[in-house]
Image 1 (spheres, one colour):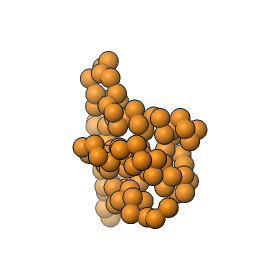
Image 2 (cartoon, one colour):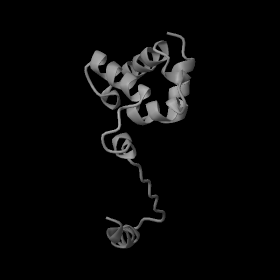
Image 3 (cartoon, one colour):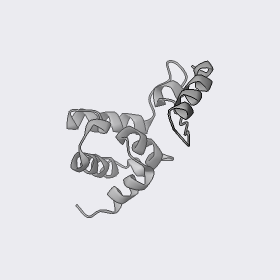
Image 4 (spheres, one colour):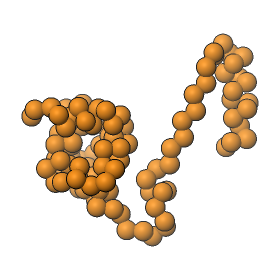
Length: 105
């Protein structure tokens, strides 16, 4: 995949782009060793997804706000690195997660 980057950059610049941004991320499952049990936070996210009937990223804004409230009620945000992990699952920024946490229901 990395071998394709120069060609992608050349094509973008030839097409008129003036700036390129590269963002790489690794799915949470790929970060854990094979066969590793899910973390408590991952279990909480899975429970909320099951309860809401879909992946967190597929929810509309009110659904995402509800998911954050459910996770907060279950103590998810007392866990280390919860906000960025939840933000990744929701497909939003960490700032948005904090906004959802500070909203009154």
